[in-house]
Image (cartoon, rainbow, N blue to C red; front, side, top):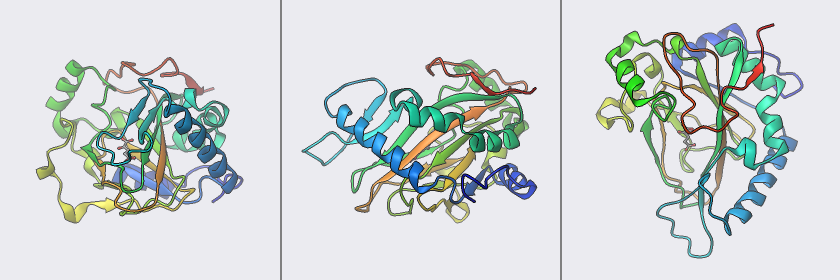
Length: 262
Ligand SMILES: O=C(O)CCC(=O)C(=O)O
């Protein structure tokens, strides 16, 4: 499916997303998108080498003595300018989100997760919801609900785009199918919860995308390869049911309606 032909998810894809808590889409971005977004990240990383900003996170244990190695750029929709603003609002992206969360589709936040060759560090097993999506008090209340907290109550969905082939070696995302139906846990997740036999690596070629729910258990391993892995993430939401989502530290685009119900 290319940008031109991609319209909406099929019923089977929507069902698979709600059953597994994630869904891979091959060929979501085309070659021009990839080139444009990569070039924008190159400009930003050059700039970040000479700038300190709370949105830029460096690799804590980098072996590189020549330049700053970037791990994460928060709020790429703001720092990256036009190509990222356009990506945030693209019709095919909003179609997918409408298919999954319904209307109105609202913006949640964005970032780029980078895994530098040999340097990119792991991301612990976690769920996105406790990462400032709700207050601590609300998280405590939701944890008490156990698996009575259903994913449908919190329609917050991430889409991670792959600007490079994502493989086990360069630290692709790994997920546990169905884990979004177990309720809310403390981050990082206790590794004893993870049954290695159930873990699915999302090895996705450049141009593909991965959709995942904010309760789905996921992590990524260190990059042990010579190949860079750039994975911008945009999250979207629709109004939650019985769960109080909060803006917290997210910027002013949080909650902006990008597609309305009428
Ligand atoms: O890209 C990665 O390595 C981790 C991304 C992630 O875990 C997230 O966006 O929640």
